[in-house]
Image 1 (tube, rainbow over the protein chains, first blue to last red):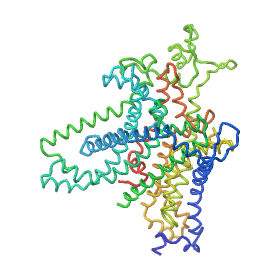
Image 2 (image 1 turned 30 degrees about the vertical axis):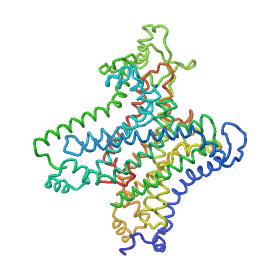
Image 3 (image 1 turned 45 degrees about the vertical axis):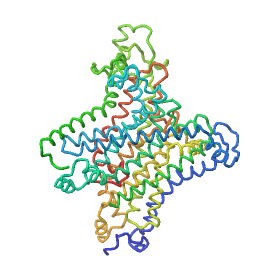
Image 4 (image 1 turned 180 degrees about the vertical axis):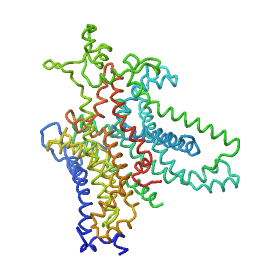
Length: 300
Length: 320
């Protein structure tokens, strides 16, 4: 009887009481899979079709099959490459910022500190709140005349969002503020898992703080830090909410924003479907890497 | 970390605590500023230098829920005295409530409706995602599923899709079947989005429940479904609650789908609140009060969730 529960083949209990395990398994799993296929996969198949047409959702004109026309036009469009460059720059700035701030905070917090639990929870607040609503509020914080950022930094009338060069940084800073807590949260878990005896041994060997950090702390936290970095890279690549609300500058037109404008403001449905597929391929590739690392972390 | 011993380490530790407190102040200032602005009189919201100390007022909230128009001249004293407290607050700001010509009732702004929409959509989609997610997680946790890893990857990958990529075909389909700008339409999208998360997290929680419990129940004559209902579900309750709160927060905060799939009828608060920032002089106190009421539930939930945040944010991969 002992092996009854241990991942038996579902059909071996078919003769037992009530519903067979096989039917329970199917009853429990198939609706979810079906739901996801209907509402995620099917739409994507549909848009794969529109990607090869010149369809515009704003007109009643029927869709014409134009083959690879959309893809050819997109990949030859320097503006699209500019959107990719902007996004890449944005991803690098915000993920790097998040790693430094988040990991730094985790290092600071990884010691006996009064009210540590409360402080940690408070530090995590920014990532839990709505990016659209909080992002909107940064408009007021960044305001050149009465924003508190210029006031506290003593920057006078510094233009954060109106300056085309600065705007991308301003958007990235909001992302860093919002998501450093995420890197901090994961790093803290990594740091607390480093065995204490390693530090004790290092101390006996009179290892300096740099040696301890680079030879003990960093290598042992690296796997979890890696998860944080990949996840944030993927999310930053998809950034839409606060970037769209904060800035209308062409210099902050991230891929998601361009895609949104193309699909819902310019109504180039066919073209935007093709663009969406290019984006999708990138996201699926990063997801693949991400899941690989997640499973590795799970196995530990 | 090793215990603090030498004098140098004591000093270093103190410095670290000071640094943490400074970081805390910096991180919380934007949130504090939303809260402060929500209780400011309008003329103090945008001042240079910024106003930190002020007498709090509820007038932003009175304005938030009503449609108003600018008063050309102050109202007479009798009208003012007869008005309820919240209307007096609006008069104080030099505005008057727009009233329905026939009934004389105050017209409400869109905020209340949008807030209700957010509640309806978030609660129903959370319920659906968590209930479906829990049973599916049980299925994956306890039974042998052919191609299990591939299915789990498929489920997670639906979560990673950028909303805009899904929204383009969904918009066309919704428009064709009349689901555009409906609660049902948004609930379906949010359920799909949260379902994959719920499966992954709940699988972790259910994996942790010893199989021996169900085994014993089966020996005692329970059917598999009874064992699931009476043994597994109660054991998984904390996990279910944590998952539900996570799903609720995700749906509550969601902006992109709501922006693209709704316009008036089913619009939730996240696209509505930014739309209040006009091109002209915006009343930031009203925007802040709207944001404040909207963010408050999530802030409270964050404290309830604090021990599960790590697990939730890493899709159940990292737990303590």
